[in-house]
Image (cartoon, rainbow, N blue to C red; front, side):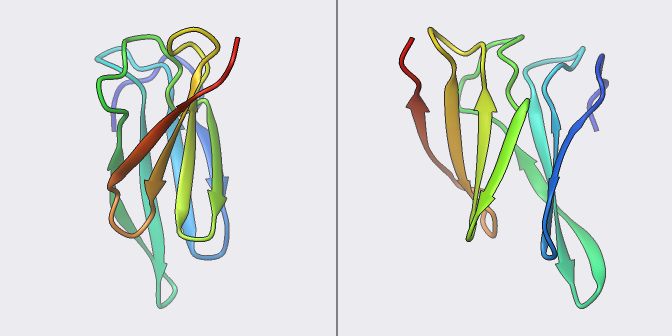
Amino acid sequence: MAAASLEPVISADAQAIAVGMPHTTDGPGRVFTFSNSAGTWVEGGTLQGNGTPLFDGFGLALAFDGGDTFVGAPSDGIGGAVYAFGVADAIFAGTFDTPP
């Protein structure tokens, strides 16, 4: 995991855990995912925004909805951004800029 300057942000349900590291010392924020496989937690991968800038807070807000993970980056652009990822395949699905 990346070196962090603040505590991680965690979102979890019975089948998945996402650990956001929004303030890292070695690059943009990122989110580490884990899934429950027959009672054993397995690391799933690392989520990063597509070209997210340093200090954008990527990973500061996390939410699950079905098979998707939504990651907030409140300091990305004007008004922040929300990134959507498929939990199972960790494929970037899009960026939804929030209005100012």
